[in-house]
Image: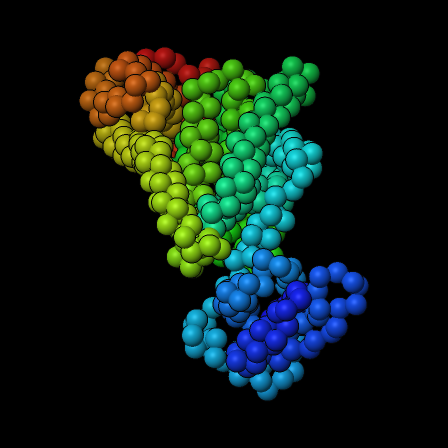
Length: 463
């Protein structure tokens, strides 16, 4: 519910009150005695769905050109006429909590913080997210999402487009570009300081093995779900007048962690590793804007002036088409990563089965480690097979049979950065009572005997 207050200019008092009477709206009138060009202040409660239609009718009688209007929240209205009014507008507009266009614009404007605060909070959120991914701490990463001021620019861009407020739309676009650039720079600088000072004395391979980093190096199509849901939820929140704080966290969840990983990749001098999370950032930004535009337009938001509706429609369709084309191209990378993940999983499963089939009965496959190269289609470049055999026997001579078999199963490189050279190394480890464990990656985890006894032996013997 809303309480609307309208300053009535001289000569419009009778027109306004007659309009309110025709609409069945309860109102209170106070005489204006300040000596300005107003004769009265009229206050009346309205259901949220009725605010925009009533303001439109007031504009038709020329109120907005000579007066100003204030719309505020109303907690409770006790009135039979108000209940009848509420029922009428529910029948006309359906069961919708859609707020007026003016409120929508005000909400979007409030979500965009002042530039100094925006820059400061963006830097802080990027630094905290970088610390979180390097610490492998989901709690710290979530904390960085809470303080990220990213919901405002995204919603301002979409709202400004559908209501034909060019200034708001351009400001939103500028803040999104600026925020992304500042966040990446802050994450990279912070990561460089951590690396140079020795606070994080890890190699690139060790850093990219951290789970919070690794899971964002090769994003797949499912990553789109977060961004699409965030865009739809953001548009629904800002258009219904509810708090967008939680939606802001969801939007930050789509943007802040991959931005932190981009900074980490830059700090460790791995530009190829940066491609995956950077593409994910771009796809998420575009997806949020794309879905928000569609949701707001479908909810019926249009420019204030009817003759500008076609201009706004053209701008919205043009922006949707542009974003859609770019999104389609970038999303193909995520599709490629998804397909590449399927290929690598299939290869590893088939290779393990082939290796196990070639081993004699007394030997077992302890582990099979695969290294990949290429983006977005990962191609195996090195395979290390560890075979266990009884300590009182000689290592089984299976290397010459395993190498061509594994190379035969390896997928062909599809990406421009893929490699066709596949090195296959077979290692032999004496173990007590070796047994095969599917999918094992750690030798110690598959030893049925005494690990200490095994550790005391000579170790791996290259084939």
